[in-house]
Image (cartoon, rainbow, N blue to C red; front, side):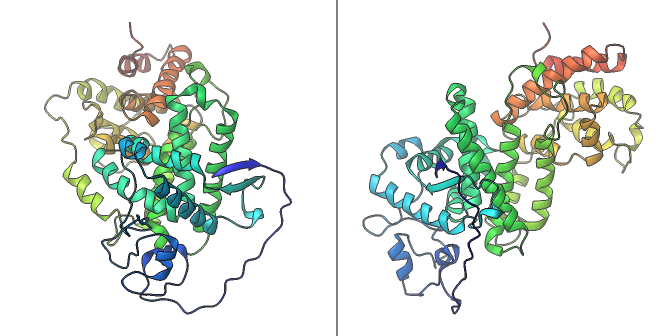
Length: 430
């Protein structure tokens, strides 16, 4: 989506949809495009005219472009395929996506949070970012067993749901900036990243403020997943002493944590593992690949856990019981991670840790409570060796917490004693 900066009057445009008889036996492509299917067999005329493979058959994916012989082109899944892709197929894909995104865009400027941006259309640069997301970025988002599934699903959904496409573009720009910091400082790319993120937020807000449509459920869960990654991966500083908790307090300091917690609300709303969901098989996959935690050699658990429990005024015998102490669940959920390294097999429980943080504990972090920050530093010191989008934040803010606690709580013996573990994992000890 090429973006031009242009000031324009905020005119409210009213669109009235023509009355029509609903198609009950139409294909999914026409439903996604919000047009009436003519139900012609074996391929409806609307799909043929649009250049996609009609998918009344459940085995055919959504919005699959047609090749020269009427077969599905499909989405590119490797860099090699991208380099050898048919230019005609690429142009067809660009046209298809551009039309879909224009249909789904928030038309009323008063409802858009970036009204000074004029959308010219989905262009070659956007398509190349889409391919980078498919070939490179998506494999860095989560455990491999899940990314293989997402690789097959996300692009098709993004092509039909503009808010998800905007987030795909945003995350790719964030990742580009991560691997090429100099290129990432380009003002045009910074503006483009901001445009896509606020446009996605505007469309999602509109979706969530209206009755939920079944066809939006899976895309909204995909969007919530990408939003969590974007929030965690967007950290602008490189020096720990310029990072939280050193910098002056701001409402955005812990936005990435609250974004992860907010995914629970989306989860409850869309029920992503419900029957019929494109994600329904993932829950079984996660269960089959559940990590086997080390229980025999609990060196760090035995060293750290009793001291942490004492520091936070908890009763060791009550940790498996509901407790009003704000540190309770944070320590209880951290305990099984202490003697296990982050890996593809353990990625889900490590990343889920933040999503299960209670608001009372997050509020302690807001006021820079030393015990809460120490607990977070422990988690940071484990995930700093994980996926790029959390590892960079964990390394910078984890070290910042350790320096902060060393400097301002030097007389708190128990905290100084417990800082050894995160400092060691974060490479801060000589």
